[in-house]
Length: 535
Ligand SMILES: *[C@@H]1O[C@H](CO)[C@@H](O)[C@H](O)[C@H]1NC(C)=O
Ligand SMILES: *[C@@H]1O[C@H](CO)[C@@H](O)[C@H](O)[C@H]1NC(C)=O
Ligand SMILES: *[C@@H]1O[C@H](CO)[C@@H](O)[C@H](O)[C@H]1NC(C)=O
Ligand SMILES: *[C@@H]1O[C@H](CO)[C@@H](O)[C@H](O)[C@H]1NC(C)=O
Ligand SMILES: *[C@@H]1O[C@H](CO)[C@@H](O)[C@H](O)[C@H]1NC(C)=O
Ligand SMILES: *[C@@H]1O[C@H](CO)[C@@H](O)[C@H](O)[C@H]1NC(C)=O
Ligand SMILES: *[C@@H]1O[C@H](CO)[C@@H](O)[C@H](O)[C@H]1NC(C)=O
Ligand SMILES: *[C@@H]1O[C@H](CO)[C@@H](O)[C@H](O)[C@H]1NC(C)=O
Ligand SMILES: *[C@@H]1O[C@H](CO)[C@@H](O)[C@H](O)[C@H]1NC(C)=O
Ligand SMILES: *[C@@H]1O[C@H](CO)[C@@H](O)[C@H](O)[C@H]1NC(C)=O
Image (cartoon, rainbow, N blue to C red; front, side, top):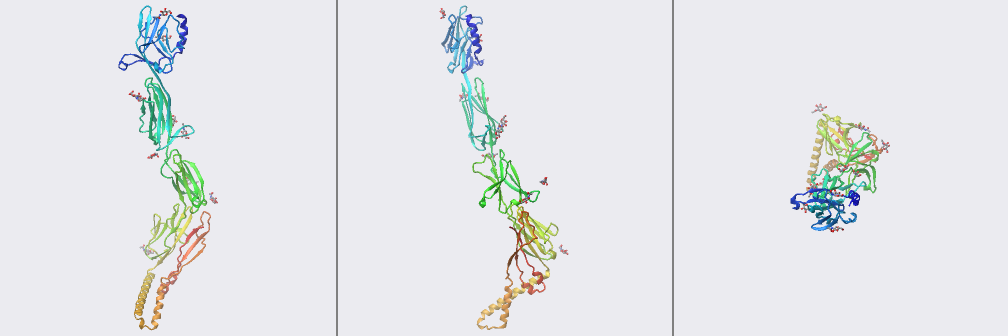
């Protein structure tokens, strides 16, 4: 026996042995057996229990589930341990090499000794365990960044899956580190864990799957980073403001609430007029400002801000735009007021994009009118009003409703005529006389008509017809339109220095002047509607 000893020692060193041994509760297997766990594919060592330490058996027999598995007669030479599945050591212990699941059984030893006869060791329960192996973790369908990080769009349905192999059973646990309210790990003891979820931003995080062999307590974990991308439903917001330098306009586009940061781009969109879109500026971020020289802006030009984001669906466009429009103030070109009364001039600026700054100015010098006891200004949406309190003769003249946006300036001229009480009386008298004459004309006409058979030409009749034509000239007015260059109006900053002014000349009716001689000078005034046009 002595010659074998060194060889056996060497072999024993290479031995992979028990993971652990523990005393199980009697209830579990009902026989108070010792349980030994052996990892699949490794070697297990089963001691022959209760054999007195210094006793050397002559023959050892190991029984597997009651039948003899291996016998060693110490008198005969042992087989090489490398070649056998079962090997009995000198001290009676049994080695099982490269464990297989079929090795799982209850083992017991029997040793025959010369001094003490036959010794039977206590039963040992060998459990073969394996794994967890091949832990596979998947999150699908997702897209992958170059660095391997997965990303998915908010709201998509994603299958989370983890599988592994383990013997005899497997406990799989899926954990998410993140702000998930539903953070409780999902756990099963099958070989697969799979669930489907409607992804929300809270699912962003490092997901991990832990596979545990409940018997050996061995664990294997995998983890994956998942990013959840989202973009707001709404479109970006386009706004503008005047830049410090008055020749520039600052356009701002903002689109908050997207993750990761979107790419915003300002474009000059000529697609409506058969052109194409050309980029002005493009940058990553939730807000993009661009300063445009006014000279690049034209009437009816469209500037557009487009948002690009990974979470937008194919063909889905998020944008905002301005169709730039020059200001166009409109209103009554002529207003007449009685001296001492209160008069309101009205101007409507409804077309300007971006919104124009609309002000009231006066006279040729175009002084701004500032609110005071005399002037009350108000604006209600697009309607701008100038109220002049206690109108006097000095208030008569031209008022401008001046509207300015980055594209240019347009003005509407309002001519205020102030009549004193006397002229007003004259007007009333004139109108009264006119109505009287008209009435008389009708009465006479009817009388003549009803007596037409009796009528002969009478000098009174020709007089009457003259009066009638006079009355008709009351409503008869002709209109002349002509154009002239008016250098007084400021040239626009965009280099379109030419300004065209249309003047609608509407001569005042002259019947009053005929009836109220002496006032005719004042009523000869021409009323202008001046509109500044950009060319
Ligand atoms: C053990 O081997 C010896 C010699 O080979 C033999 O005499 C003996 O009978 C064997 N014992 C048993 C129990 O088989
Ligand atoms: C029996 O011998 C083997 C190999 O030499 C050794 O690994 C094991 O610990 C021994 N067992 C006992 C109970 O002494
Ligand atoms: C991988 O790339 C994405 C996008 O570039 C980035 O958001 C993420 O943080 C990266 N992850 C790692 C682990 O570097
Ligand atoms: C994610 O999508 C859901 C609906 O699919 C929506 O209600 C929610 O507002 C979105 N979250 C974000 C941050 O966009
Ligand atoms: C599985 O593992 C989890 C976490 O480690 C534990 O909470 C759970 O009780 C285990 N389940 C089983 C059946 O062992
Ligand atoms: C999970 O574990 C429980 C208790 O340990 C057991 O009854 C059940 O059969 C196991 N299920 C699977 C699929 O292994
Ligand atoms: C996931 O873990 C990595 C490494 O610890 C960390 O850099 C990353 O920020 C985590 N990702 C998330 C979404 O929490
Ligand atoms: C624009 O005006 C702001 C505040 O009035 C000032 O802080 C800024 O420096 C000015 N920018 C330029 C370019 O003049
Ligand atoms: C704005 O554009 C005009 C015409 O192209 C140019 O003359 C002017 O210098 C520009 N202004 C600035 C501040 O660049
Ligand atoms: C209106 O103006 C005139 C002339 O300035 C002045 O005499 C008069 O008191 C004013 N009336 C009112 C009601 O303010």
